[in-house]
Length: 277
Ligand SMILES: Nc1ncnc2c1ncn2[C@@H]1O[C@H](COP(=O)(O)OP(=O)(O)OP(=O)(O)O)[C@@H](O)[C@H]1O
Ligand SMILES: [Mg+2]
Image (cartoon, rainbow, N blue to C red):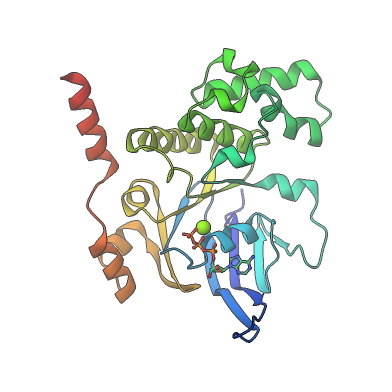
């Protein structure tokens, strides 16, 4: 087994050309500025930072939705650059994304079974019966029921829809899952359930996560390594204990000071106590 990281990012930039207006000259906005990091197999890198610091821009480059302006991204040892080369199906399957609002990415007219089987239909020659079995299997893995197979997205709660989005993302057994604020739109108790699900799936399938969040309690619960971004730059990168235990950068210190200490464990205990009462 090779020991190379699953994801290797070097000197990555993304700029946007901003059109001028009546009183504003055209300009260039650099959303991601020379970012470097590695993600080891089976681990979670959390990416934190305030709104607009470039997290989703980074996510779109990692998942081959958007091209980098310069710099390199290697997935499983192979470079990806969608502006220069076509990306093979194989490569696309290796990296999947889960968004904050899964409703936007689920077709309202498609039954859940179809949602889950679509990647198999598009990418494999698997017979229908086998696809169905895999989809049913996956429903169970993410904590849903076989009877959900024939239902439509609007028939689910937000938490359940996020389970469906996660299930769809892992149907093709990706190497890397990029999660862009996957629990930010959910109630705290549902957040905890989804985070537990992600942990279980990681253990079971050896998945690697890039987990984007502005919520430090979530990050503390899930991350092996933490990367803090500030105006497109990485200002802090280290193990969770390093970054939480001894934040170096002044931005990180402010960020940590501003965050109420609501960790998932204590939330779960509170909910358990309430249910017991
Ligand atoms: N397509 C685009 N064209 C022009 N500017 C863009 C585009 N996409 C993002 N930006 C700008 O790039 C910067 C980074 O945006 P990005 O969406 O990556 O931030 P973010 O960290 O994900 O923020 P949030 O936490 O609010 O989701 C912002 O200033 C944003 O306005
Ligand atoms: Mg974003």
